[in-house]
Length: 163
Image 1 (tube, rainbow, N blue to C red):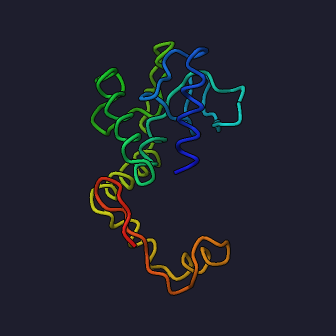
Image 2 (image 1 turned 90 degrees about the vertical axis):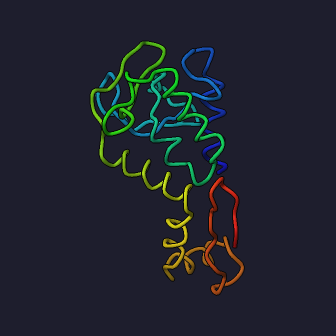
Image 3 (image 1 turned 180 degrees about the horizontal axis):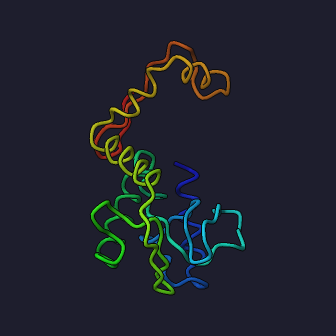
């Protein structure tokens, strides 16, 4: 959640330089760009960032920041409609400042969008993930849970959490 909110704040901060970014139009992750495929991100500042928005960034964060992420996806679709949203969902990337829209829809980005949407709707993805003992053991080893027997956390519809 913290990383997603930091990225959103980063895009908002870049609004002066790239007017297409806003509190509801944000998202930077590896994607196509007008210059080809770029593995970019931020914060910290990445000089390759050019105002491109990658819808799968907020979509992949639906389970962490449901309100902000869903609002971003809805706003993108509302503002740019058919230019960025088609038969297979959102284009891989677009630049609202320059008007560039990627002609591709990339499967891995559609995949994270679907995983995020399913988890937001049912909480099952997180539940299935947390059923793996390796995940629970890893969390204990890095200090994210207090005991190996801690049950899986479930993200409920709307983003609330239930142990």
